[in-house]
Length: 165
Image 1 (cartoon, rainbow, N blue to C red):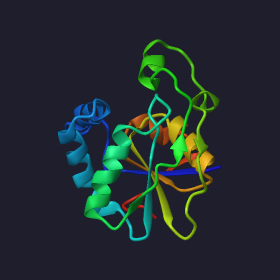
Image 2 (image 1 turned 45 degrees about the horizontal axis):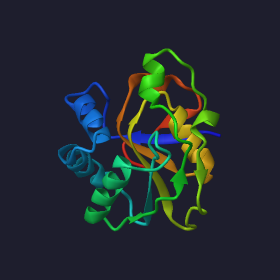
Image 3 (image 1 turned 120 degrees about the horizontal axis):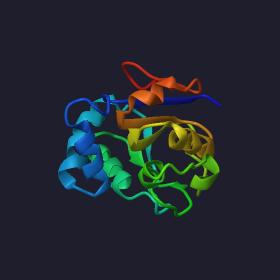
């Protein structure tokens, strides 16, 4: 299955790296900053689905979705869950392998029909999380605040320009 994603910019561009990390810590300024950039790309009839964190539930991405929804007509549906695990950052830093199966993503209910399902995340790095989320929900597009350069080398990831389509 092909995974389509969109990002507002490159992870190493400006202060995106700092902002993306601050979001993970729940920094309101970072969530507001990312949301302010992301709102202009949200199409009508969108349903925003927050990406679960390492806890298995959406945390900062849920706050990001809510902030985006305040500025758009988008609906927020927290319907994606995962297995509790170590953070992907920690696993990568330790040189440990992880697989989509370890994420354990599943949908708690079907995605709404007739709506544009957009899975919201802070960063698309390798694309493993993005692809697993799309599979679990059965479709949609991943929209991240930033994308790492190496996310563009996978054949099953398609980066959308200049809008979410």
